[in-house]
Image: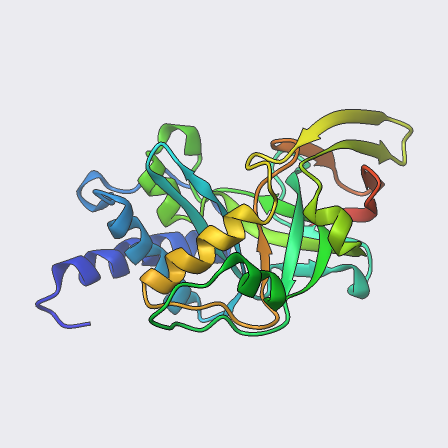
Length: 262
């Protein structure tokens, strides 16, 4: 970055605010008015600056099909991804004693999808998927009131992503066809909730196809080992800390998790 590049300098300054909040776990007000991203490209420049300053590495992506002209994508950082292989305990940034999550499918890439001149076909993206897992996106914002911030501000901050819990592997064929499924949440205390889950894009892989092409157009690629989530089946909801929780994803299987405060 040169001193003559005001866009990069602004992105770096804004990223420093968001990185400090990520590290401390403290939320704060909207970005200073003079530094708020003026559009989607400016927001992605801040996203990239956050990634560079954190230096944590990108372990995955969240994405969705563009809506109302808005791009839906954000990196998920190494160190914020928890896997069932390490146990069911998941440490996160809790607010008011609750864990905020979204039930999703995580597509784990088995090969790179590097930058190239020609587009990737859906079949090529499919061939790069090694496994599909039940997952929970961990939701938190660096803003005290993210609903008061603009879409570009939230995009700059990673669209409320604070991590990912990757549960057991699901059957790839069944998961690919899972446009709708019941989400049943059972808490050890005895409470049970059933939600009529629907993927926001219909086809759970469609946002991954879009993400691959969007990143390619920006000179970026996807790497083997990265996990990509593509949309919540049941919106966002809160779960308690300190209890075993089982979430059944229709016929795909059951994810078990135990949240603790980070």
